[in-house]
Image 1 (cartoon, rainbow over the protein chains, first blue to last red):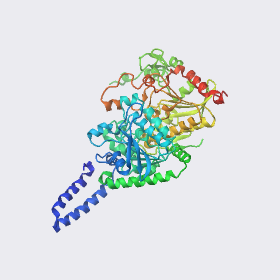
Image 2: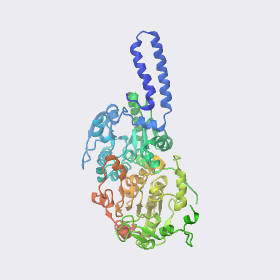
Image 3: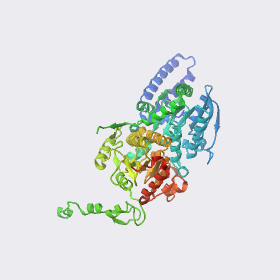
Length: 318
Length: 287
């Protein structure tokens, strides 16, 4: 497992434990040492992961071993069938769309995928969609709405791609249209921030009845690096910027921006993907069932109301 | 150093020459021509030489676009930013803008008339944190669209929002993209005309929400319009951007704005669309 800087002490102990386990056999002394080491490892994990700074959380959200959309699609859902293309320009691999079953019920899925190995990352453009990706997503929203299939979106992107082609083909317009569409479709819609919720590129598939976030996910208007280079002209101050931006799942829940936090294994989903997957499934089902109970018109009214009331301001007399 | 030589010559008004020069003259950023400000004022701050559109404050647009003296600036004028993140330096910045610009935020909204047609007019001010969209901006917008619906008036937005979604309010600013689009959807369903005018510069979260959803989208010439800022794109792709990239004319060519309209013709253009889209069902009220 690849370790982040602040995880080093944990990984070192875990390596020692592995080495000792090989030797332990029936040796009582070694076994006792092993026990103590394991206790120490637990304490250390508790200590480090319970006191993460926001910047450390950002690093876990971007961890190279963190399960991505493809993992959840294939392990949480059954019989996934992908559909491709925006019927206009091309297929954008940064966004995966298709149909599947969740615990026996039909669902439609929109997911941002960052890619696994280097080759796949390049193919997926590191999870940074082009306008045609959002237009493909809109196709799926329309289909799901017409055939009354609940929609689930998985958000994981550094942001919508800033490039020449993206601007030429109307990145702004695609995101704006996608937001408008999500405020018009009547099907149940649950969105999950599984890793990185990068600004408009994330919101473009996340205007939902319920928005959930994995425990170590982040969601922000700008990346900490981008914020730091604007504020202090120094991208290296991302640490301070992350603190200022208050972008963790816990922050978002306190602000009322997200509806629930999906617990992850201590230290992140990659430390126990099965547990992460089970929690994901449980929480998505719970929220889906809740919003399914509402009348379609009522559901849409509530969704619009939620976004219409977002913001923090003071009204003065006069 | 002898103080005598350092002393600036004081003119009777108590200002030095540089200050007086800045007060009277303005230089075109594009062609470098120098003008009396009074002359530019008559030209609606469009360079007579090269057609460059100077950036102007929200209240100037009110003056140039609405009929004289009837702007009722009353939608959301008592709401103020709450600094929900306690973001470094934000509160202090706001105080400065309140004093200097006499605005409660980057947006101004009210009812007025355009050649006799009553409208709700929403306009932003670049000088207020780059015309960026935070919670107050979003709230003013939504109150404006709802006013338009309740009184059956066309809605016009005019943006100079280079800052996009306002960083200082973090995730709250991002949510304003969805909030303003709720306003647009409501306008659409009530069949109220929505004209979006985009001026220099309109970027990021503003361009990627309501500003790109006008029934008609008009752009001032030469404005920088787009999603990502040019510097961000250059850093990402590691090459220089072509001349004229992300300008109004570029967006017109690519099919993302309906027309590029000089500031001097904007009022008449708006009047045409207001009449045309307003139709005969009383929407183009001339009261």
